[in-house]
Structure formats: C-alpha cells, structure tokens
View 1 (cartoon, rainbow, N blue to C red):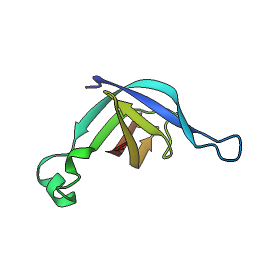
View 2: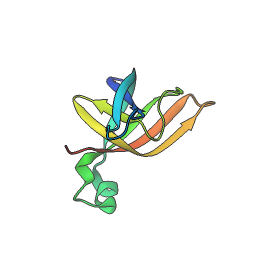
View 3: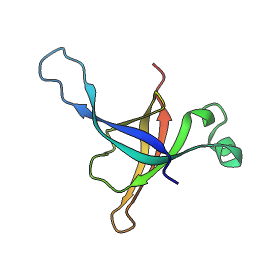
View 4: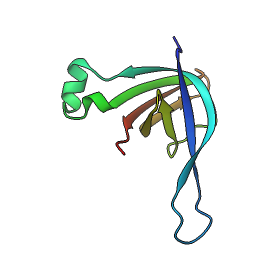
Length: 99
C-alpha cells in the first residue's frame, strides 16, 4: 500500500533581516499518494482537481501543518492534516506548488 517515497521538508526560520524562508529535508518516508479524480474532484472545482493529492503515511512527529511534501520531483503544500497516533496513520490533503 505504501509505495511512494515522500520527502518531508520542514521550515527553517530566517536568521537575519532580509533573508527568505527556506525548507530543508527532515525525513523521507513511505506513503500512499492518490490523486483527486471523479465526482469528488468535480465538486471541489475542476480547475484545480489535478493538482490536489491525498497522502497517507504512518504516524510520525516530523510532519506539521507548515511542512512541505515532495514526491516524484513535485512539491506540495499541506491544506489539511489529520494525525491519529492510536491508528498509526496520518492523512494529508495537499496542493501542488507552482513555481
């Protein structure tokens, strides 16, 4: 089920005035990545339906709402995150970042 490698990028605070925020790799984990499609994607809005993914992974304390996720060379911004320690799962809805 967990067949994709996803890199978790965590925010690094700028140390000085005028510096930009950067994201550094914190961990690489196995995850399941599902692209939004079908009726649900059409209800959410057909224009951005292909840029939204659902990512499921085992519970960890590395990923936060401010993290970015990278899979197959594409970077995603987290829209929603649900972590359940007892179920040992994290479910994330993320949108592709266009550079």
